[in-house]
Image 1 (cartoon, rainbow, N blue to C red):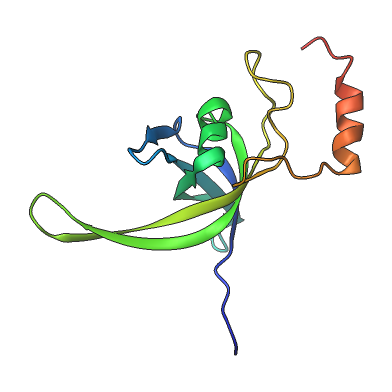
Image 2 (spheres, rainbow, N blue to C red):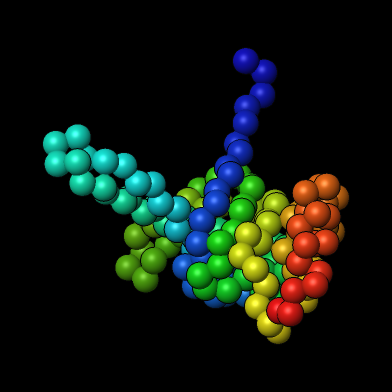
Length: 149
């Protein structure tokens, strides 16, 4: 097989407001967790069981700036990106590892809050420019244009 694929797609709820840092070289990075859940029925008891997994999301540059402005704890969000494993030394000099989702694309699935821009929820790529909206997006915007909120 020639080549390989490292692609992650997540839809989940933001666990806390993004932590945004401005680095000395001018880069911007945002970090936040999102939760994904699956529900299934236990075969023996018939009881519904919900499993939640937490994913650490990292966004860079323009996407990080958008996250700082618009992503809030509790929002539902769509993320596309890749998995990246990194290591570091802790205070006791032990090697620690973490696996993160490096996001390339973000789409806000929650409605924007009162104080955010009306156009805050189109899909954005890491270049910070909106992807072309679908016809469905245009129809939704038409329906919502006369709403009082």
